[in-house]
Image 1 (cartoon, rainbow, N blue to C red):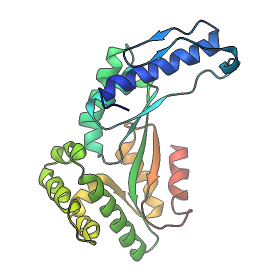
Image 2 (image 1 turned 90 degrees about the horizontal axis):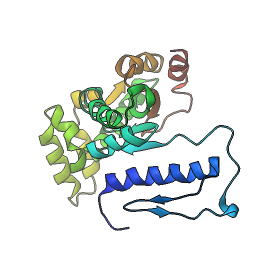
Image 3 (image 1 turned 120 degrees about the vertical axis):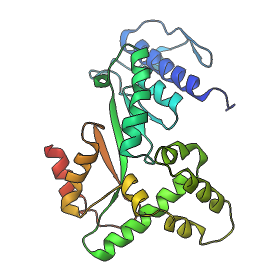
Length: 238
């Protein structure tokens, strides 16, 4: 695929997809003509019967401002990148999303935000330490990507991103572990919920309640499947 105007292309892709769904649902002639996509033929062989529950919800993963606005303009939901913080969501992502919503005459209530957030947890001190190490390395990996640096810049950690990027381009086989060691406790606490299993649910609600509508546990370390059961129950009750 040629690299050209990714946000405009994505906006039109969603619009074209909705036009196809509308043709299936109403039987109206498909006549979508855009800058990037043209769909004008829908044969009976490719047309399913109208779905009783309507078209699927469309969620868009977005990192930059332009794609976030597209999510607000034409999508049902936003999937922010895991490399974000409560402050970045509140001060940057949500205002940009609101610009897209305003452009389409919608409000925050018209979209859902589904966020996969880092969680550090464990039943013992050893498990907590291993979890923290795994999350530090994942944060460092994302932090080495220049496109994600605005999150670090907002917190005054831009130089950390520069150093992580430099190390990522090296040849040291242990560089990823060394990069994780650069993620100190303050950076870890900003990007991850750090709590014992019975406190994870409350900590997620305290940090992201009212900001996101759905939360997924991002735990890049070995852990028992039941580790987040108390948190899941707490979130389902909320």
